[in-house]
Amino acid sequence: MAPTVASITCVWLHGDSLSPHDAALQAYPDAPVVFVFDEPLLTGHYRLTFKRLFFMYECLVDLYEQIPNPVKELRRGRVVDEVLDVCRACGATQLAVTETYAPRYRQFVRQFEQHGLTVRQFPKPKLVPYSGPAPKRFMAFWKRIERAAFRD
Image 1 (tube, rainbow, N blue to C red):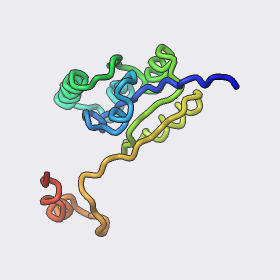
Image 2 (image 1 turned 90 degrees about the vertical axis):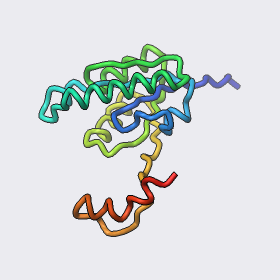
Image 3 (image 1 turned 30 degrees about the vertical axis):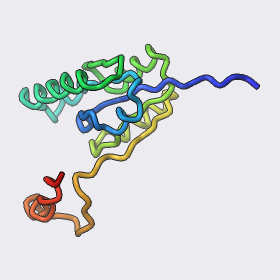
Image 4 (image 1 turned 135 degrees about the vertical axis):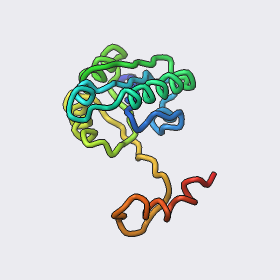
């Protein structure tokens, strides 16, 4: 019987997973980590403000100081290209990520899989449990969940 080879996993962080409690980070504390400032998002019709970009950068700096992962990459470019580059450099065949509602997330996952990565997706966290009707306005929704959102 041939010995099994351990698979190397990288963790892909995105704008909705910038927390030391992120499920993918928690599952792989020794894995290389990569965050990519998405060039098409930065220069396209989304155009994030400097304040938003700086806030995200500060969150990443704080996060990278807190997590034990030995390799922490921060890049700018096309998400799929940059993540694949980190995975290749580390010899990773698996990618761990926490799901997000971001519009292009599913497209990115498909592209990673098409390039031969096994993508392990962790469920996106919920702010609070909610089973009511779909809200039509944020403030009406917020009034229903506010107490639960701030409960420790």
